[in-house]
Image (cartoon, rainbow, N blue to C red; front, side, top):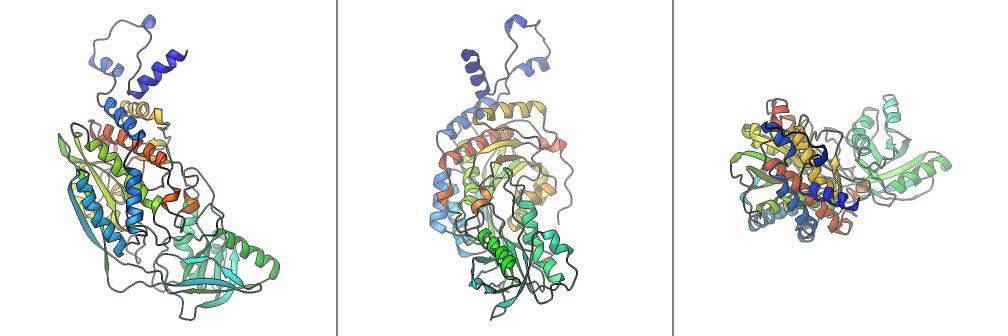
Length: 491
């Protein structure tokens, strides 16, 4: 029994398709299709070798360390983000990438400034808060007003117009901890749209319980919608949200004081994408885009969000660049700028992703696939290919990735990550390598997003999965575009 298991493991590691036992073998089929069905796809062995090499160690952790140590927090449009991009371009050249360039784009920046909050009555005490990205400042003396607490966002939406006149709206809805991060969507919607919903009902400020899953006393920042005449908006740490509920239950009406010096400079700033390639040997005009985003919030050093994603995808491509021959297709690595910061309405956010899609709009039809690593540094547990992916390719990918405990997802790889979204909407097929996000939102957008939260072994497992699947796509003839919708018109 153990011998059979060992042989199976070896076959899977090589990406082989096992033939039936000899005793049950039927007469040979001479049709080429039958022969192909029993043979491993020719590029699977290389994919398995890349996988195994990455599991023994990669450059991913050292890249995370370099980015977070040299540049610290990298707010969108800031000097640290720019310096990191310039350093990154030189580093990518040293790593052997070609066609390395920095592609600038305009950006409406935002600066945090001093901020604080407190309960004024009935039980005076400080609150641990932070302004939401893109939020306007309070008046110079701050805002002091009665708070109206809502257990859910729906309760706020159900409040009639005028019911919050002159008051501070506080939404205490907690975020659910889910492996795939599905609990984030509802809370990020509150963060984005809650301030405007509160303003429409007369509120003069907005506070939400942080979009986080840990009970540490850190507030989680993040972008909110930037609208003309918007109100100051804040996130409060989960323990402080619980404290507010207790104070309200015991002491009646709660009065808060909020202060923020946040600003949106009138002068248009700049951000940038860093682009680098491994040129394809046979079909160089066919491109697979991978990457992560280089910017971060100002609270931590952006180790998990998203220096890890930048490092994982770069390290995976680097392993492929070290092979004796390049893949058939071009692999393009993009370090996206300004993923985090929203833009004044009606401009879209995801500025780096949109800038890439606009810059390359005439060649998006040649983009075979795209994906971004932007979900931290924990292990990958499943993969999703574009809808309609050929069965033989999906089977080979599953065989190659099985030894590192990565299985096929029941869902296609739609979207491909935040910065891939703009090009995916224009018809570029997206794939996904799904990370365990059980604890991602414990430190997401907080001061605790630092390299201490990154496990080198988990990074290497990510690199192994990315390198293997990337090679399979880049060196095969699979064409996900055949099953993809026609690109829409770019704007």
